[in-house]
Image 1 (cartoon, helix red, strand yellow):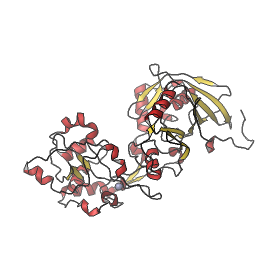
Image 2 (spheres, rainbow, N blue to C red; image 1 turned 90 degrees about the horizontal axis):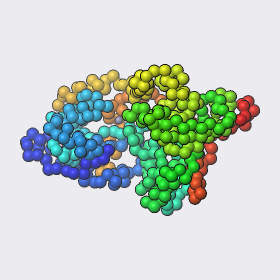
Image 3 (cartoon, helix red, strand yellow; image 1 turned 120 degrees about the horizontal axis):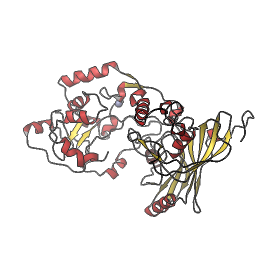
Image 4 (cartoon, rainbow, N blue to C red; image 1 turned 90 degrees about the vertical axis):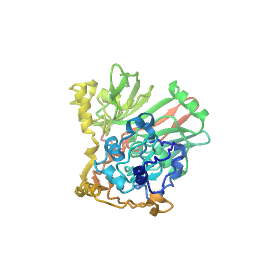
Length: 429
Ligand SMILES: [Zn+2]
């Protein structure tokens, strides 16, 4: 989230003075966002961060939220705006001194938010696990960086991912920053990922891609025996579920063109190449679902929630509204929670009602918040047991193999799963 760089002198109201009493501030409120990442020391290789402090600020929404938040009590406002937390959490966080207003500890849950207040909240950041796979460098010079992205990590910060991203790993492991992303790959997708290192290359590569002068080739493993002849798909693609970023074929969608060619099949599944002329979100995944050959471990598009034919021919067997509901239900975040520590909610309720001394965050030393304990009794993530994801969750059988035009040729080797087995017990194409 973006920081609100503006600060405001505290009000003179005595109650507010009392509630914002601790002068120690772990933050420097005027630091600009673009310097923020550089302020976090890199974690060691074998100790990927599970304990990185982060800020919840209203900066990202400052034009709209300021008005809505003004005059509201801080804990109540926090509870209503950030639904992922337990009802009692924001009160407890305030009382324990985890909430800062304009850089000063705010321990009064009743503090009324003022116009321009900068609110910070200290909490564990639990980053989801990623595969232990190296980032391979394909090309690295003063103009560009091209890598073979491992599956399992998003390209840049999103949701709970920050360090466990391509950008985060390049920065923490190789000290590389200031990159300009030319195109994106989904979290579970692997393959060619291009960054420009300067404005000129950025423009050149983006123009080449937008004008279709750059050929983009992927490989994927799909369900079923794919036809031996070339298959062309030009179904338009549009949004299905905004919040999840999911797409579908729809007549009012944007034009999309894909060409598929079978590389080999074992009689059950097939490895195919996909050349896309357009670059719509999830284009290959959506087109293959439409054709009836969904990508083998595509957790979103190869799912029974799309109906008895799993979306083949855009035949869902139910109205759109029901389709959306079924997909949302199938992918609810809570499905990943196995067990919540039964005493957790009780504990929060107790702390909310009892009188406690706020933590003195200065005790955590110069490195401050990074040295906080690994277990935090009020952290929801510390009190949840999650399902252990399967390999399919981390890695989709979709790999960006090549970006090529008359000037550039960025190419990776085939991933293991796309290499034709040498045994003779499958059908050759
Ligand atoms: Zn935690």
